[in-house]
Image 1: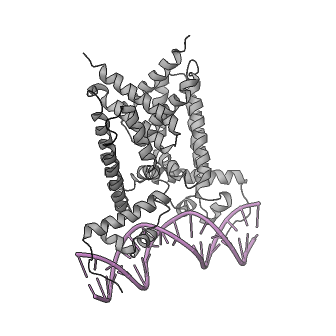
Image 2: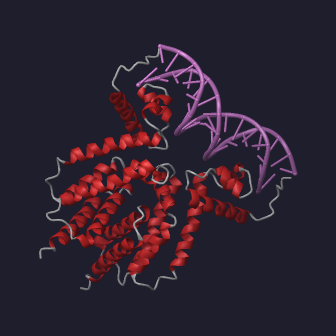
Image 3: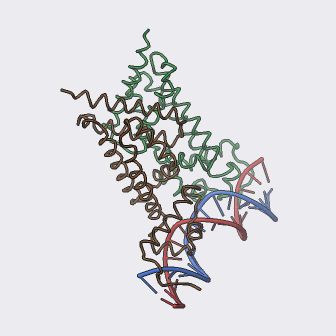
Length: 186
Length: 186
DNA sequence: ACCTGAACACCGTTCAAGT
DNA sequence: ACCTGAACACCGTTCAAGT
């Protein structure tokens, strides 16, 4: 007995599909999670998903937005701590999601929307890091230093370094940023 | 008219299949290159490939070994230059192959042989970098500093930073390594 | 507007059969 | 030992049809 009329508003159902996808994508990874199984987990037929999302990549973006919003929200709880702690916290947070980090990188070439999402993600993260510094980085090395931080954090996340190694590397990153920022003392 | 008897030694045919795969994998990427098309380029049926390689990942490893050997061989031509130049050279070299870098990271979880290859790759690269230093890094920060170099290089490769940005970042990396190495002056 | 059953085109891989 | 034709199980996606 198919109930075709919306028992829920569209946004709510969309969120349900994203929630189902999120659980499976995080547990099994993007490639190993067929639309099939996501639909099943959400109690719909596979093609129903295509009413709410253009394709599997758009569904992935829904999940990514969800995860990013959660990380940003949770960050406020640690925003007072020293920068090195915050970076280590971020690494641990992203580690829970590392399989999707790799997936995003792979799919940048295959999907323009994923490419845009990835760019937005890095801008967001750069802003977050920069806001934690006592004063802005000198324009000259600004981009370069933020790139180094981003790449090292990504490396720590995707090549799962153990927690203590990751903490000390974050310390080194934070020290470097703060040394540079306070050297503009003039 | 199927010629079934080996007109060539096994290793040679294997190399031909790898060469065909290499061209297509680099041009179109792993996901967008069906076994189908690789076979076609090598003038065999798809299942013939499975006589020489267990699966698509083993074929990928064949291509990766090929590329790595070539990079190591080409490196000898620049081994005399300053470290920062060598790092920038490496970034440009890996950039030609960046889609496979992402592929490897994604497939680590899906294929144990790829995982092993990836580990070997990082060991090889660490050795290469370390050999260029005037003296060995202090044991205390040894692993950490090599990790930073590896991750930043990977970041530069996969997030295609422009060549000048990449060069200056490599300079920063090299300066840091050399400062640390010569601080053990005792 | 929302959802389904059935199909499509494609994919990696296998297998029985040939030489 | 080496290779093929044909098939298998699976995949993302579409479409005509239902409510």
